[in-house]
Length: 569
Ligand SMILES: [Zn+2]
Image (cartoon, rainbow, N blue to C red; front, side, top):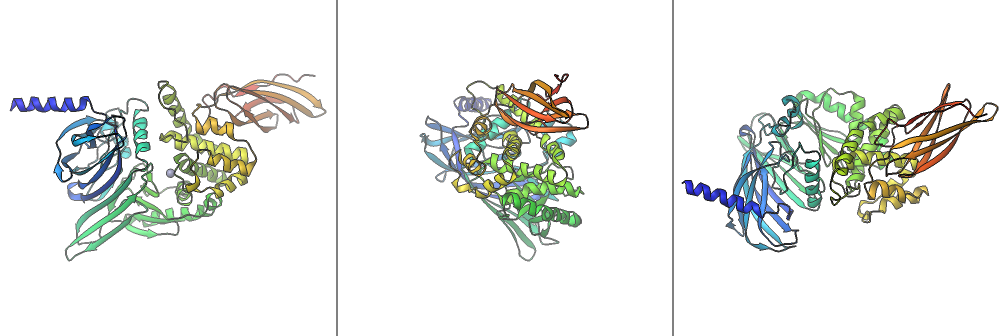
């Protein structure tokens, strides 16, 4: 017996020795799952196609699922394959660990060649926030963040990055190592963005009360069937291409509201709240369509039963608690979702960045520019952290330009700023016209959008796209180098301001001249590591110059103000 154990350990370590976990891209998934809410169980049977994208033939493949699930079978051509299952520590799953099967393939798979596997796995998905609590997050807030579980009352499970409920293969990610999770997961998302995934989920129920609904996406179908005492709920979804989505599902005995812009699945007692969501969506619909066109499809909102759960979106599906939220905040949230439903792009920085930008534009419409910049400002820390993490990487690590990045903080937060800067530079009309001309199927060349914008605005945007979209040049760092005031005539002063950008990314930035009882603002284009001069006339002696009102994300905001000296005679 002892010998057997030793042999097993030796096998496992030999297998992992030469294993390239990222050699295979999973190009096709066809999965059929059964949910048993009472037991908190999920069992899945299905097939996977793996393509060897490495340069060397592969004899082994790694298949990873959540540590709370167990591999039952892995086959090729109807024949069981040998595999070793081992725990693998990685924070791409809420449990902080994966069940990794290292499979011996029937024959070596050459570069560019594919292999189809039939797999079976099952287990439980219970509330588990181990990956967060072990890095010191308090239990309660960790549970509001990692809320995924299958449960009798309600089930909600997000895909890879939260719960690895479908097989993946990637290197270990570690939340305590800054940027590691986003980098590993980002690499996976890019590799998998062209994959096709078909999922079917079913659950049987006793025929009493309202039948439970299983939902796997806004574009999928959900149905149920009732035979005398038993019923069967099912859902079917196709994600092809998968893009950056993490296929997710929910299940509960939801009540349903069909509104003009939304489909809301809610718990019975929250009917009024579901209606508030629908009203918020109606209130913002016109504003959104003026920016990005008419919605193509209804947004699906499904209620999370934990009132403290952080919301999650995947495609046109929004999973969120239906709280007693301020209607103004609900409107902002709905702006994001309706933008998605009206405007499609396979480029995440365009689709997500734009959705976040239109939220800020709506905030400006609700109140003013300052309130909009405050909303945009909530993205600033995320951008700064992500820039720091990429800057600290080795020189040969790949760049993270907006055009290709899979890092959330870039394709959402940094992209939101980029859209805002474009709006400030080109004006609302030109930007709206360019967006109206955007066709996702024509967006093949990276410069497609730049040219659409240039055609509407007569601006040369090459330098801007170089610094912000095609490359990651970090953030600007503006300072006022000098400000020379002089008296131009009676009651008229002229101040000459030189602004320097210490960073490598340039931008057009507002310069504000303050004087007693008022201020004047002028915009100036400053290139990375460059300087630019602007002359501003004021009716009173200028007192202070401030560069950047927060509309340009900047690495250092402490050096932006400059006291103006005495007026030259
Ligand atoms: Zn979004």
